[in-house]
Length: 103
Image 1 (cartoon, rainbow, N blue to C red):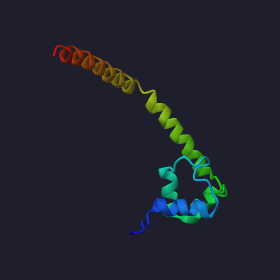
Image 2: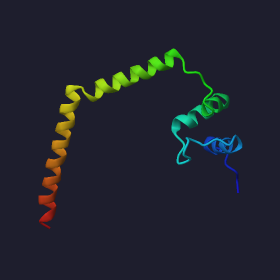
Image 3: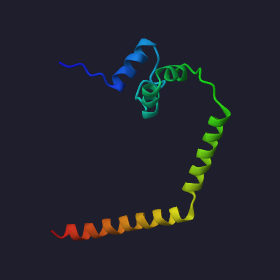
Image 4: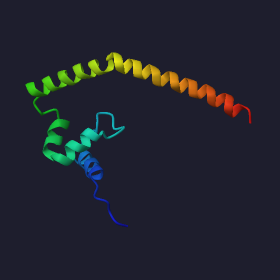
């Protein structure tokens, strides 16, 4: 049987070797964590240990992403489009019930 050498397998082996939980509760490996591990194992290790300094740029990036998410979710056109899609879905469901119920 051929041994796989995937990034996920290496990630899990490193977690076991360094006695680290994968994401504090061992239920899943996030894509972000796996990406950090593949990109740079040292950076991943430092991040898992909480030893990476948080820079001003990182904080500003987080603030900007939160502001953008708020703007997108509250945009009037987006709300209208979502309402129209939901209404069309309900109408199609009712039509399907009437058309499918006659057979």
